[in-house]
Every structure is written in structure tokens, then in C-alpha cells.
Length: 330
Image (cartoon, rainbow, N blue to C red; front, side, top):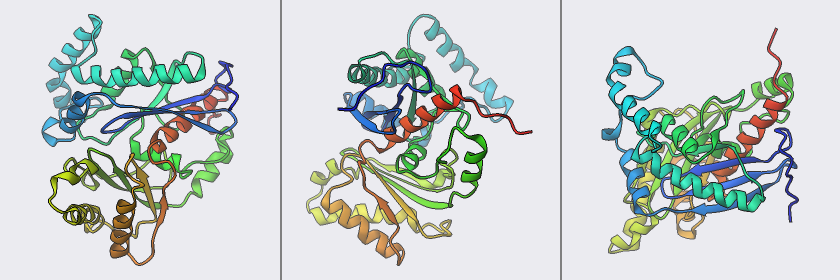
């Protein structure tokens, strides 16, 4: 049994990370001794999954802070006024925020029960849906009675890819409470070509990104997609299983073969509750062998909780950096 600390000082308090995937949410605690506790996986009803599917569509996009220009700001003013009115009346800023906050609230109650104490600040990572905006995540966190935690290295709630990279032990300095040492270590971080694959009951989500520092992933908008008809649950829709797996293999290769890929993939991050399935693993290896001669490093450790683990690491570091702030450069 891991001894939990009830010390509320930021330097000793555990870091709490939640991940909101396309199908469910997960929670992880990062303790002061460096260990992690997987707390819970929580699923909502079909409304949540339908919302996530809708928010993955380009047709659902709209202007959202921070705005690119004054035209975007003015066009979004009616929506912002409506959000403000709903919040003033005690409602969630939008129906989508209500669903997100419900999942966060359930993760909060499970985490507090596990810790035996209340929590107030968290880091929440979220799927790279094109119409899921940071304001929705922040409003959902606040409506669930919590505060979004940021740090000197990140100023907004992170995407799932960034925290999965960190959860795999990549892209982070070791001495994060020593500003100069951390900066020097970050300068030596290798540049990785990262393929992240989330395979769940409902969807196959794939991202390709160039990352050195976990806080600053570079993922062009055309290097990410979600396939809602290729989750493991869709296998039953095919008359033959091999036909389904041909589609899965093609989807994995589709992103990898695009002409903007200049370097071989060096790291593969696996996420989702179905990612360790024997057949999926075989198809993944076959696809990687077809794309490049040398296999990349494949991170298979605990794909269900990987993103929440990275979010918890972000949270713990942010809390300790707040307790011992970095000195400004002279």
C-alpha cells in the first residue's frame, strides 16, 4: 500500500491528472515519491461519445479564444454572451461543457475517495478533436468545482499526445526544480518523430508529431485523424475479420505514408483499452515493417492510463515549480 500524504503544501501534495478520451475518462495520482496510482476509468452514456464524434468534425468548428483577428472576435461575441449568461445563472457554459464537467466530477469523486482528501487543482488532457476548445475544458473543470492547473512550462491544458509522450518518460528534464539544469537538459532532448495510436472500442485515433520537449509538440492539423468506424466494436460489422484488419492496417499506413513525412518514426505511443490486443499488435508491427526497415521504440506500458499518467506528471511538476519558482534569466 502506497502511503498517501495529506500534506497540502504544493511541494508535497500529489499531482492529479485526468484524461478525457473520445470514449471515457481516466484519473491518475502522481505521488511525491515519484510513484503513480491508477485511480479509475469512467464511462458516460452515449451522449458523451456522440458529442466527441460531433466535435471531431470540421463542420463543428467555430471561432474561439485566443482569436486570430478582430473579425473572429466580433463573430464569436453572441456565443460568448450566451455562455456568460448561462454561467451567471449557474448553468454550464454550454451543453458540451455540461457533459465534460460530469465526467470530470465523477473522476474527481473517485480520486478523492482514493486519496481520502479533497482536491482542488488538476491537469486535464483531452483528445485532439478539431472542435474541442480549451475554453470548454477550463469551463468544465470549473463547473466540476476544480481549478485548471498550469505551470511555468505550460500555460494551458495539454493535448493527449503531449501527456502521453511525458507519461512514457520522454521529453522532460530530470531536474525540473533547478531552472538552469532543466534548461540545459531540455537543450539535449532528442527530436523524435512520434506516431501515437489510440485504439478503443469506439474509434481508431492516429496522430503523427515531431516532439523534443513534451510541453511543445508540433502536430500539423493534417497529421491527425479519428476513424469512428474502425474501433474494435466495428469488427462485428464485417462479414470477415480479415477484411476489418485490412482496413485497420491501411488506416495506420495512411498517415505514415503522406508526403510530409521526412524522417522515419522513432517512437510509437499506444493508448486505449484495446491497444494491447494480440491481433492489433500483429497488424501494427506489419504496418510499421511496411513503412520502414527499422522498427521504432513501441511503448506498450499501460495504454489505458498513459495519458492521465502524463497529465499527473505535468500537475506534480507545476505544483513544485509554484512552490519553488524559477528565477528569471538575467
